[in-house]
Length: 307
Image 1 (cartoon, rainbow, N blue to C red):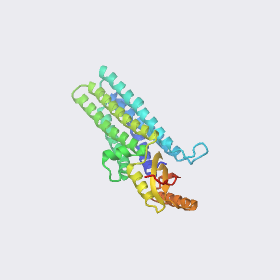
Image 2: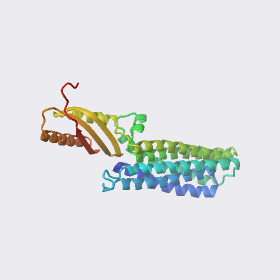
Image 3: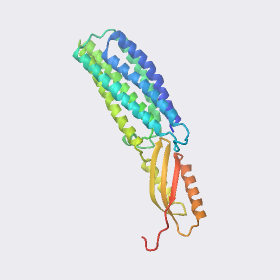
Image 4: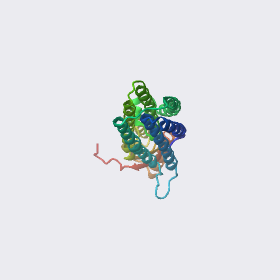
């Protein structure tokens, strides 16, 4: 299930994006700036995406039922994929198309002060949302390097908000550059160029989020440090001879399915094996509470002559 920490990042993004969207679109209407319209479109999509992520968090938290005995955690990954597709199509490609039109038919930029004021306010709102998401991301980094933490992240909501807000911050700078250069150099075509750059940035963000969502929807395993620790913990039980097979799959960021095939030591009664299974499950859940579904299959005893 989605954690309260990721909820905080998503809610902060909703609040910030909604305020920024209104301001940018009003400024775009007054000034006729393509870069400001592109940035406003980006913020509008951010707001809708954050609402969809919040919907996904709520739906994935529903308890198991007859049709979904393992719960609804995978819905979170589905809604994240929908968000990535919206960023790619509506925000990315749409913004690029608008920029191309403004490059071919550039128009004069009016009310520069409106745009500068709104971009300054947008920068403050985006920084608030970005720092909130960054804190949540760093809290789950667990000593890994940045690239490794991004690759192994299992909560797509925090990643989505962090990526979107990072793109939004860069988009504000690009829009500002396009406006100022276009105004002072008397080259309004640069406003359209800035719009294309912002759109390309959103397409790149969408591609990364789509890949992350795809791997999680396909049934991604728990991180290696978790599976290695589980293997060692099970081996450490006095009744266990060896772990023959260990498989995991994330059903949500904090909901992992674990299947184990274990060979117990010879001479144990059925009751001893049952007690060992209960003991192993209890110990694993104590150390790794995300292991919500644990299935342990006892293997047949080693036969005489087997290595």
